[in-house]
Image 1: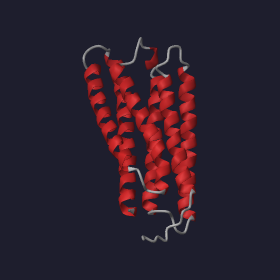
Image 2: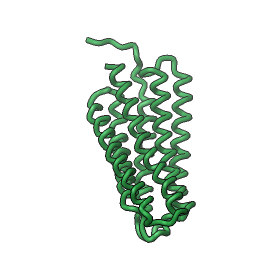
Image 3: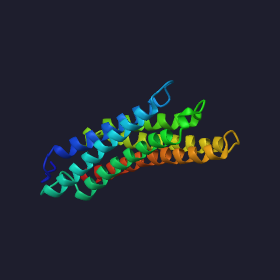
Image 4: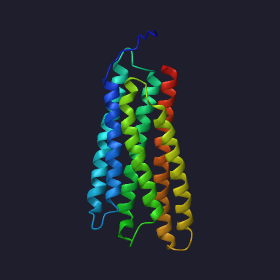
Length: 208
């Protein structure tokens, strides 16, 4: 039997779970931008509210790390995971804000590949939210990081095809520049989800 002096303190797991649930809220809001007649400013504002909530969760997590004598697992890994979850939210907020500020939702339609990237992010968010509570037992997580990596590859393919579309001559130069910035944030969000999964894998291997 393996013995551990690590506490079963639940606050860290709850904070990770809340942060991941905010990512689901974020991708759901991005999906709203594809709906006809959507209030884009409202979506952007709500994304900002979710991002602020995520910042508060991250700050609470950091304070908890500093005030806890023995943490459930390595302090550096707790800090890294919390920071990476927050990074994902920052990218999601940037996508919504740029779409609104650049007026891109006023186009007849956004490129199909952009919607495909948002769909990938939506799947990554839901899988991540399902995985976070499993950190408490460190069991049943392998499928999570494998699927996140697979989805990140799907996101890479959609991103490359989006670049092909943007530089095909279909859009004017200024619109291309605006869309390229949004595309880069979408791709960065996909990568950030993978960073979260890689950290979870590292934690699981250390604690097994």
